[in-house]
Image (cartoon, rainbow, N blue to C red; front, side):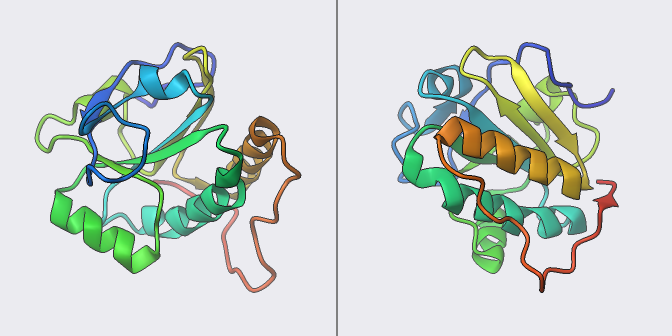
Length: 174
């Protein structure tokens, strides 16, 4: 099974936040995709802390979050396939600030609902619940497309994502 592609209805997920104090996008201590989508598009970024491609991708996702979060017109969350302690260490190590969700280990209901076989897997879900963008692994082109889509959703100019000093490959499978 491969990850869900653009054009299909996004499965509802309701899973716990890593930290109940993450932000205002929660119902108690749980994140609901349906609830978050009522406020605008949602970025779901699935990862595993030991994945080297996740370690490559997440600092760039954080750049996107920082560039457009002030608009308040989208939600970005990660979905960790690891425990709370390891996820916190990953966030600390890579300077990630957007909220993290925990996909319950062993069962991984969110990962299964999205048909994941590899991480990182990133989805942009529209406010009507349709997957607009789907990317598995690392793709510079996909990150640039996500950048454009978030700028458009935010009503902001496209922010520079890559710096001349960044040494990033065009593609790496997850």
